Image (cartoon, rainbow, N blue to C red; front, side):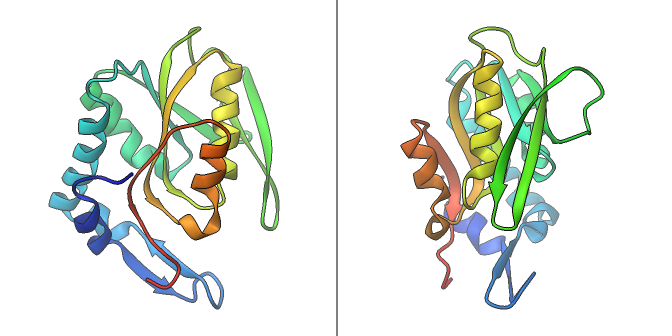
Length: 182
């Protein structure tokens, strides 16, 4: 599912061919963040989606998820919880390791981030293979939170992440999506 602003948001995202390696089309959200009207429409897309859902917290994945997660939490009047890369949180944490194309990575969450049955929206900048989102979702569930939805600015459906997330039983929302040939 995408937003009413999806086509507009997509038009503002820059595609950088052959970066970081040949054959890869990197989707650069920097122009989106630099364009005040587009950035407002982006945040509004998420606000309109979640304003009636009684969300207790926005959990955002390090680091680009923070860009949208913090203003979204502010607009919804709920808390903001960072899901960080290993070693970045100063208090007692729980962690989840997941596979990448080139190895493994670990995300962490403060052990006291949520109360039992808190309603959480998990957000990041994009969904590619789904590994980071699923690891973060596992942390939230292990901590007692209830995931309302996993959300992103953009989805890269050909990489299979959003399908993998749905297969794991989660609802997925992206403002826009890109096919590999776009």
